[in-house]
Length: 196
Image (tube, rainbow, N blue to C red):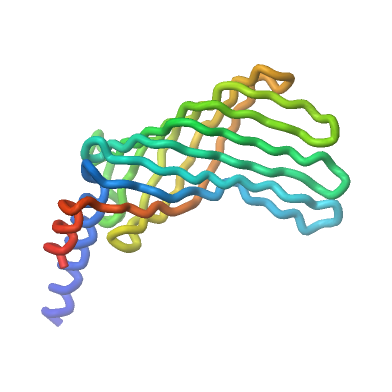
């Protein structure tokens, strides 16, 4: 029984250390989110989904900068298809456990804040309108590390486009689920190996 309890304590401590090791200066993060997937099953039902690949480099512990792409498709039978795109830079800040009253709910996960700025647009088929403009967004998220190098995450984000075509200013709240793969430097690998 003592051995089982000790193993459990070491596992929790190890997962906490690996979560911290993956968000250290010099590491890379690549992955993406699937946001707003909807496939209609009723007669005349259509589809609506977005994919959001992203990648970032940790310039400091807990701070990553990188890029993102957001591609969306929406349509239905006998209806115009809407294609949306956004491309630009993103930044992430991972909160330390206990920082600003934020508790680390699960010992192997971290809260983060994400913001993005880029260009984006919308194009509607069959003679529909199009617009291009400034894309920006921000919101909180949580990354749950299922392994030392893979984090499942949820992200709630305010997303807006200040378009210059007929679309004008559009905004929405999105909820994305996805994963990130953390590629550690040799320092991060050493911390993970020490915990094992």
